[in-house]
Amino acid sequence: MDRLYERCCGIDVHKKMIVACFKCGKEQEIREYGTTTAELRELTAWLLDGKCEMIAMESTASYWKPLYNIFELSGLDAIVVNARDMKAVPGRKTDVKDSEWIADLLQHGLLKASYVPDREQRELREASRYRKSLIEERARELNRLQKMLEGANIKLSSFASNINGKSSRRVLNALLEGKKLDEEQLQDLLHGSMHKKISDIMQAVDGILTPLQKQLIRNIIDHIDDMSRRIEDIEDMDKLISNYLGKYQKAIEQLDEIPGIGIQSAETILAEIGLDMTRFPSDAHISSWAGLAPGNNESAGKRRNSKTTKGNKTLKITLIQCAKSAVKKEGTFFHAQYQRLVVRRGKNRAVVAVAHSMLIAIYHMLKEDKPYQELGEDYYNQFNKERKINAYLKKLFALGWRPEIATQPT
Image (cartoon, rainbow, N blue to C red; front, side, top):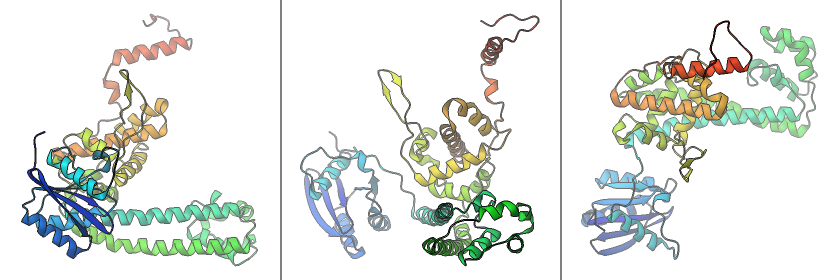
């Protein structure tokens, strides 16, 4: 096979050590290094002296990041490759052979590089993902609190919309102190709009709390309060992120026009995909990268149902959350698409399809620098009108409907 690179390096990455195989034509040299910054600089100097053209390494957890940072600062070209794209032939497996195999594939151009954004965007990703993880962690703690209360026969969430609200927390604190609540005490603990539910809440808080359950609930509440404080501190992080989102401001305003997408969601989406859409050859490519494209499952010329592909989890989850919000807005294309698919494909598949459409719209908006254009809920009615009319008439005739003057559809 033809050689794409005359001088290249394949690196097998681990937590405490790396094995590098530097190829120069048919000759090769293998060295082992640690993963500290000083040792990585030694590796970089060795590759610079050898005039290395390209470096390839496996995307092993986050262990590839220190290497990529050093190579980026040193001006060396490097690619990160998914492990599934460079599996070696089964047999003897060692770190040395893995590095040799990576270098051999790279030399002949048989590796597909993963998308790695620039350093500024990687830092934005870390900040936005940290913000998202804190909010998700508090939501998990609230679910734990709900399960704990259900186990204690306390049904407060059946009559309180927010179990972490001020009224709910005052009631929970009174129960944890062992107080027997009557209607007068509840009136003091609940805000005005909940007074009409006092009789129901009296029955809901009549539970059985053991000392162990009380201690567990106190621990959970303390954790929720701590997470709430951290999330309030995120406002400072929001300002910090906004300072780095200057060049993204126009794109954020464009994405905010899409139904279901807010400012924070737009910031998360742009932190994941960036502004340069030339990295993705087509909308199908970015959909596959995000994990929103349908999988391929074909045999004997027949396509079967299959799951979506694996992709960027943060982007996929964010778009699905936005899609669930978008389908609730009537009079929009996304609402019509959801209603069209949910009947025969189910709720989950219909929401994923809407998220897929949203990502395609985002891709073309950023690539072509165009505002969002609402297609409307009657978009699908513009195609095959006669066939649809005929299908509806067949259903009417099957239900026994007969007009005074009508011919049965063929």
